[in-house]
Length: 159
Image (cartoon, rainbow, N blue to C red):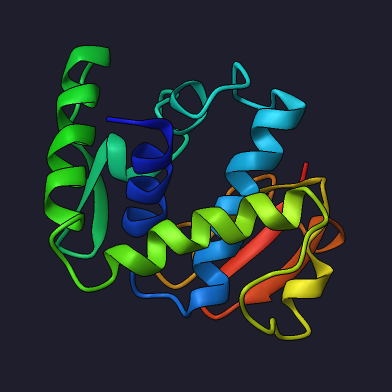
């Protein structure tokens, strides 16, 4: 799997039910983490596949809560391949690939392929965290003073 496919797979898993700008925002978090080496070695795989950083590669959402289903790097890589195969067949796939390209454009200061809303403009190069308060317990790092933006069901934060 290429870096682009892996990033788009992560975006699909994390934000398939989010509007397009939410998908791009997840891509921005991936890129920001890579640039800052925040829970990252600076690569796409070393960011999205890092232990317990992006839930879809390690957990399943079962009966209204996250449950760890993957134990170890080999299982995680197999799960990433499986998720890629699943998502690449779905109608949302092209949006997730395009969202990765828009996230890269944003990081490079280039024009985007869409007109983002006001919350999207609050994202910064320091935005490296997010969670969905509707389905996940509030993490200790999710404090009001660190909140950068709320885009649909995801709250985005700086560290």
